[in-house]
Length: 191
Image 1 (tube, rainbow, N blue to C red):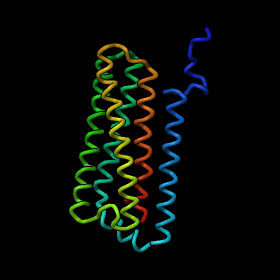
Image 2: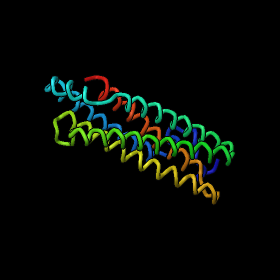
Image 3: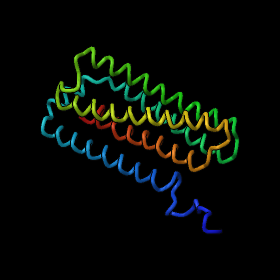
């Protein structure tokens, strides 16, 4: 192995590159701190948090959990097919990942619409401040992920796509899944 060859099996070079993993860890720490703050505030205002949680429809959360986990499966399959150089299946699975990401946004938009119509805006109370800030921040990540995945989908046509691009995109997308798996139970189930 010469000095310019990257050893993808090295701990110093995780899939997607070290920079992507630094970003992922920073994002997880950010969401983690916010969730700890939410739990702390929930202890300070248990009645407000409990009554506010009852105003949520957990069905939306369950649907979006299934949708994001399914999209994560398709992302893993697209990465696998890319490694096999199977263009047709890669595009199919990356397309399905994007489709399920869009479905997540549609379900979330329906939920947001219901909250706004019920007058449960940002500023309504402490619980809904956390609800809006955490879920909107997550939505921004999903939108960024969809843009990244769409770039992969169309870049593959030109054959200029590298494995590190696919792995970095997959790592980012799976981070969105993981963050939702942390948000869902704390926001919809715990209080």
